Structures are given as C-alpha cells and as structure tokens.
Length: 289
Length: 333
Image (cartoon, rainbow over all chains, first blue to last red; front, top):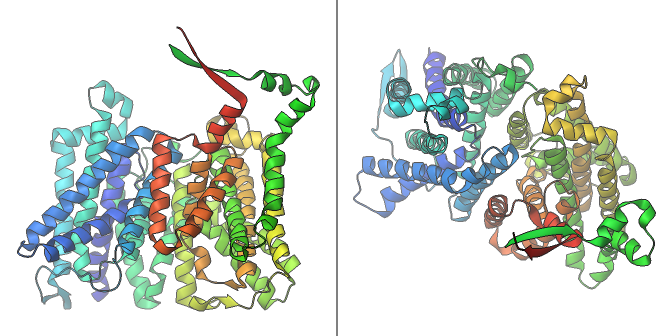
C-alpha cells in the first residue's frame, strides 16, 4: 500500500517537473535545457520574496516568483533564441549555456547549504489508505491533477491553446492560417517556464533549494519526455508513472542511490526498442534518421 | 554603396599547385601553419621562467583536444555533445585502472586508456546514434552526472576520494611536449580526415542524413566512426590529465570539461578545427586569470558563449580567414 501511494505521488511529481519541458519542445521544437535552472530560480525567487520583503503573504510570493520566471523564459526566447531559430546546434548550446549560467550564478551568489528552505503550505499529515502522508504531498497530487485538467482544457477550448496545437502539428500550415509562429513560441516558453516555477514552489517545500536540484530536475524531465515521446503530452503522464513507480520500487527493494540509474536505463531501453517513445506516433519518421 | 569582398590575387594564384612560383606565395600558404606549429612548440621555452604557466600550457592543450573533439562532432558529424566530461572521465579512470591496478607503465597506459576508453564511450552512446541529434545531446548531458552518482553511491574506483598513485611524467618537458605534439598531430590528421572520403560522407550525414541513407550508406555506422574518433581525442585528454595530476577522481567528470570546449569552439569558429584550438588558447589562460571568481567563471563562459552565438556566430577563426584571403572595398551599385 505504501508503495502504491508513494508511487502515485512520485509519478505526479515527475510529470509536474516534465510538463514544462515537453510543452516547450512540442510547440517551439526548442529543447529547453534551461528548464532545471528556471526551476531552481523560481524557488529561489519565492524564497527571496518571502524572506527579504517581510510581510508579503506566501501566496503572493509564490505568484511573484512564478510570474518572474515565466517572464525570464519569454525573454530567453525573445532576445536570444529567436535569432538562432532553426539552427539546432546553436539552440541546444544556447539554452544549455543559459541554464548553466543561471545555476552556477546562483551557486556563486551563495545558494548552497541548507539555509534556503520554503515552508510547507500546511503542516501535519493525514492517513490515506493506511499510509501517513503529509498535506504538502497531497497538495502536490491535487495541484498536479488540476494542472493536467487546466492544460487539457486550455489546449482544446481556447484560441491560444488551439494555436499551440496547430503549430505543434504542422508549423507551416498553421502559419498559413495566420498563427504567428514566434508569438506562439514566446508564449510557450513563458508557460513552460511558469510550469517549471509552479513545480518548484510545490515541490521545494519538501526539501532544500540547492543548485544540484536543477540538474536533477533537468535530467528527470528529459528522461520522462524521451520515454513518453518527445513532445507528446499524454506520453509524459504515462512515462512519469512508469519511471515514478520504477524509482519507488528500486528505492524500496535496492537503494535510493539508483534512482538516476533507473532513469537512464529507461531512456536507453526506450531508444533501443521504440525510439519515438510510447506516444510518439505522430513524428515517428522524423525521429529516426 | 555596397561593400564587396574579393579574393586576394595571391590566394587565387596559390590555389592551384602549378601556380606557386615565388617564395612569397609559398609563405602565404605555409605561413599560418608554420606560425602555429612553431609557436606551440616554442611555448614551453617561452614560459621557462614561469613554472606555473608551464602547467597552464598542459591544461590548455588538453582543453584544446576536447574542443577539437567537440568541433568535429558538432560541425562534421552533426551531433552536439553536451558532456565532454564523459570522455575525460572515462579516459582518466581507464588510465588510472591500467596504471595503478594493473601496473602498466605510463607510455603504454595512456594509449591503451585512449583506445579502450573510446570504445567504451562509443558503446555507451550507441543507443542514441540511429536517432536525431537532440537525443545525443540529451544522453551525453546525462552521462557525466550519472557516472559521478554511480561512483559515489557504489564506492567503486576509489569512491569520492578517487584513485591516487597514478604514475607521473618523468619531467616537465615530457609533460609539455607529449600533449603539444599530440594536439598538433590530431589537428592536422583531422583536417586531412574530414576531406577524405569518410569525412565527406560524415559531412553529408550532418547536412542531409536521408540522402546518405538513400545512397545505401548506413548513417549509424558513419556516426559510430565519428563518435569513436571524437572519443579518442577526449579520452586521451582525460588519460593525460589523470597522469598529470597523478590522480583520477570524480572531478574528471566536472562541468568545466563540458562547457569550456563548447565555449572555445563557438568563440574560435565552428567547423574550422583550428578555431577550436584558438578558442581554447584564449579561454583557458583567461580562466586561470579569473581563478579567484570560483564558479562564477562558468557564468562568464556562458555569457561569452551566448553572446558569440547570437551576435558573432562565425567566430574568430573564420573572421581571420576572411581577412587573410580577401579584401573588401566599397562599390557603387
């Protein structure tokens, strides 16, 4: 029972982490290697608002942190990526460099050790199916599901969301129908970064804000996206459940050190067996050369 | 008015082998090469009185090898390697294993570590080679992080303390010239290789993989060759560093080995191979000067890198080549 409950929590955590990455990739075809950095930056900003400007309510600090992160994401596209759009090598290098700059800059600026902790939303815990789960984890599960639902509604029933899907499916045809490709990409980076920020403020109260967290988040987000099929949203959810449960099982039966190994093994097996990922049907031909 | 660029007469005359008639033309062709070779070989003597900077030369050349490897992979094979540290780490640990555990002498352990390490790296990267380049970037990004974790967690290969007691070089000149000569050999060998048949096919893989496939050539096989060659360079640098510091530890998987070569290639000019060297020769001394800044140096590299990619994507070497071969003038349209 414990395995089941914590497996579900872990899976939803993973999918929260990777939703932002996959959203950006599916729409703008930019692998956003700055994703982990944005995650940490958002947590740090929230901490800053909470502790430097005393008197700000927690919710407002979170809101400010997430919004600033999303603006940073939009700025990354608007000022840097737009100039090198379509040059795959340059895109990868540029996003990677930006991510490293943010992370190592934060480390240099003093983000290390256990001093940076966000408070949990509500203290205490509750019994779920005989397993004691603290409220923060329940909130993560709730917020995660809410995010899926909102994203689903957003991409089906709003004009911007439909434009997103149009660009993701066929950029040229979408442009012919009057959808601004660059504008959509800016928006997608903003939303993707906001999702990274949201994941950060939800998950970071469970631990410290550390720079290494950024690298871990990036690796896990990428692992989930590759397994689910790069750019497929349904795939993200399925893949995060696979990895999430696999991790909990290895942690339970072998050792917690192997979490990263599980992720990598899963990637390698996926690449060998079905390179386009579980749900990557649409672009299957493009993935293989 | 419009600026137009015209090849220098000298360049046009020296293009065909028959046209070389004067010492000036021979100098025009050979000058830059001789300058590079003689300059590199003279470096240890120039810094004779500064032993610290003689050490920097070694590191600089090791980074130059890594940059060369990145440049080759990115601009001739079309694979972006975000984890050059993977190559150095594997090479370094293999050198340490051969030298410390098996007692193989240094002059044999380095080449052996290079070849075995390159084979090991290629094997690790094999699953993502039949796929688009972005997968390669993702997987190479993960490997250095992963190997650090595995070594820490399992406490193998010396764990967090690393493996000590790797044999040092006999003397400082040996240290300097091993790496300088290897850099020069690899540089000119690679320049020749990319213009051979295999190199041309590799470039075709980068530009249009579908057409290579349509010609009945296996893209995966060509990429394996490319990755193996790049891994050779990286693993040699790693093995050399392990012997230089007499130590192989998880800092061989450090971020510096991944990001400095990338920055060096972007600054020096991608696709020229020499540019990678020039970039490393600029960045590594710079990083020694900025040693006091600690991890902030990585921020500086990244800023330079992004700046160059966005505003001056051709890089220094291509700019210099253009100035050397062509002149510009304003003409009326």
